[in-house]
Length: 366
Ligand code: UD1
Image (cartoon, rainbow, N blue to C red; front, side, top):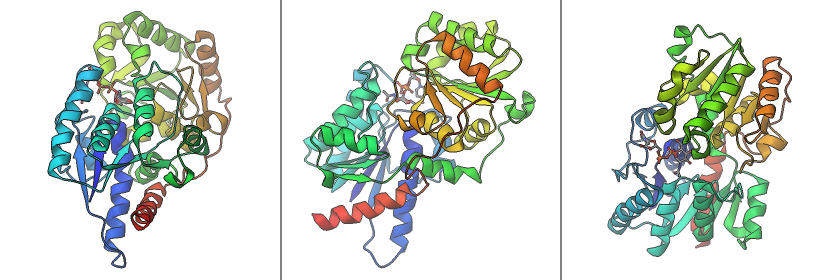
């Protein structure tokens, strides 16, 4: 029995291709079926951050929702641990698979290992080396404890080897996020704001912001938005607002004319929006990867990234909080002066199948 963990929005895109690949393999009668349970920790609970992703990505209803909800870092992590411990005791598993870098990833890894259960980490090994990010702490703790690593890049493999992980524990499978991206491409949905804002292909920007460093302080957020609006005064900037960001954005939204704050979009709507954008400004990890594969210019408002191949190979640049670089980048995007980029190795839409092959290998090795 395998237990799959998903808790927050970016987890759903990473787990869905794996569920699909397991179901496909189970239809192939030659191998014994992989039994699995899907656990939703409830870290994200709004329909727009959770339910819609299950529907679009054809994820089955979770076997259980732990209802962890929001809170401080410790409160949320603790609640996930308490509830998942009960669940795992009731449903012992041979392997727990965690994805990404959210609090659910780390919390469920700690619980599993303390119950002597093996853990595999999808997207293991990536590092920003920025200890102010809760996600970096989640990555480090998860990777210190996990038994198997399904990695997205050679850089991730090297990071793991450097910490003493053995090559046999690492499976370089590619990027399940990109499996979901490819799955979405012939299912894209035009969001309702497309007509409401009279958007036209390659004539608008997309902005996403949710990192505490960018959104929790009102003045920082306001300054950032002002620079963006001033840099491309003749273009709309479509801004799907994360719930974390909403609290502050609502207080200053009236100051901006061209920045259009909208509700969070569904996955198929969001990919539609970035696919046709002139450029994307973000502080998200996943969006850096999606824009690289779609070959859309991307500016990341961080000084570091745990996904360096989006910069060295893809269409992403890092500008930290440098306002001059932000102005220049937006102006370059506006005049379509941007590197073309190439697609990183194994970001090809087949990572889920490779993970399933690795799961059979792990089972055989036991
Ligand atoms: C979490 C992840 C982050 C990921 C992001 C994607 C951690 C440490 N962070 O950050 O890595 O990129 O999700 O969205 O795990 N809220 C709602 N509805 C919800 C969920 C949250 O309104 O369904 C509100 C909460 O009240 C909270 C805020 O959004 O104030 C932040 O939620 P939280 O889960 O703490 O972290 P995220 O910022 O979403």
